[in-house]
Image 1: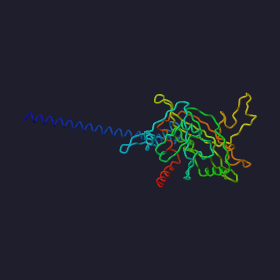
Image 2: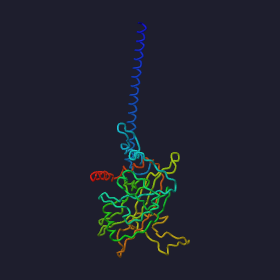
Image 3: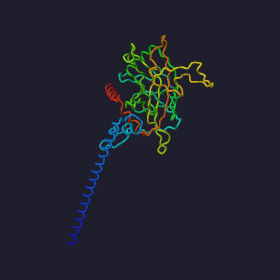
Image 4: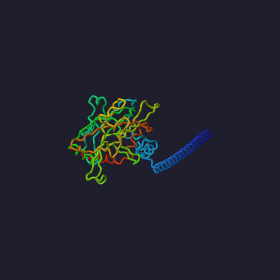
Length: 371
């Protein structure tokens, strides 16, 4: 009987000790969680103060600098969450395009750019890019070499992406290069003016990335670029409004290199700066230089001269002085810039600082109403 009582006492003592140890462990865990939560709140508060100081200092959110990327990522922190009950941090690419993987390119590799529909915020009527008086599309044999990887939305909508007339090669800068000369009659000029009035924009994609017009000074970034622009009579002092055409395009492509992680380069940005320029043709006497070498036929587009937007050299969207067709010379240039922006964060700028994002919401609503 005594032995049984001693055994029960030992068991009770053991259970009590186990209970006390469990209580101490739970208390320690709770204290640790509270400490971690407090530390997390402190870090979040310090982060908020740091970001507020950056904004107060005038830091933009659309640039490709490390500071702009940090501020951009902070403003999108709520959108970079995955999960329903337990939301965890993720890149925007993982949220928007789950399963998508980056493409790597080697130096000199041809990278196709594709044209999408020419669209406007003011009207629901889109146009094909090659309906415009622009350079002809690449030959069918070339297009077969570079097929557009359609996503589910493109397949359901039946979008037919075609190659752009511009040539891009990985890390291959291109100085000002002429593409083609197009002649536009009075009827098409009137149509083009209507497109300018309705703010139609041309959309290109490179490596699945839409082209951006970006301004760090004004802190905005918008997709696509306009066909042209209109100068009001009140600002020019003339009797009528003046229309001008964009015919030169400066492309800037940013990329990331990390030999320790992957081979080649990954594209992280695709920007365009459109220019309106009435190209000046070199006379026959000026074609041959003193050393006997042949000169470029246009003095406004050479390996050393890059067109700029200048009111004195804008290309007016109108017929010639004697009623002849308008002649448009298209040209472009390409510059590659190395960047530290990770590939997974390259979509951040499309959701920050863009004043026309709400149009996509209305497009979704309209599609639901139509269907």
